[in-house]
Image 1 (tube, rainbow, N blue to C red):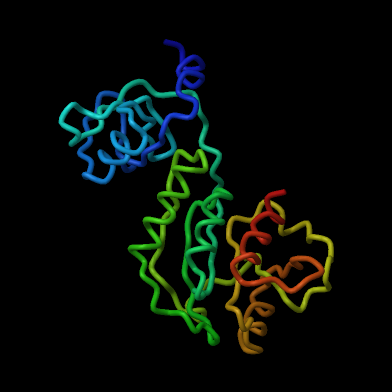
Image 2 (cartoon, rainbow, N blue to C red):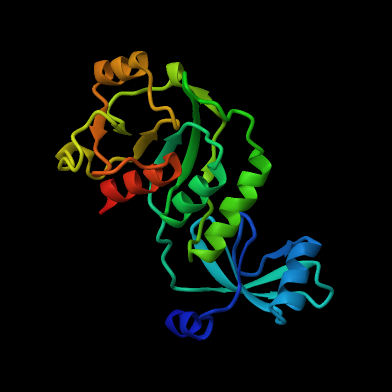
Length: 227
């Protein structure tokens, strides 16, 4: 079957992330949760298995303990190469869900002076981004990098959501195509952090004419540099 025909045939079939080491012919062990989801919830054994930027036609084994990987499809991964650097917030789950749907390649949690939600369940966040990747037609799952302190970041030429920027200001040309973007906490960046960003030549962008919650600010910032 041609790749184009495979893709057409597989429309609306459940998508399952099975890790980045995937190829045609592989037999990949899966947990009882995936077996239950396919056979009891979706009532089928065929699926799309994806990871590492590619996706494949696949089938749950008769014993429900593994995924058997078949032919690769022609679907191109819609993800981008952007790393979202963000201060953890109370609704970090919403932020990461939305950013994953928008194609983010990696997340870098940043501890700023005003970060007040440092104790995040990162295992739960990983499950959230996997589910968001499965649902948003990605062929990859964004990486979650270890948290860093703001003072440890390389701020040179990054794009950041700048609450000082004139509301509705045009996007600086230098921000287009950037692959690192920084969003601060609900309380915003401190004066010391703004000074560090300015001294490093970071590129501040406006997010519009209204005040946004931190989780939505991240999504708008991503959209601005990719539109």
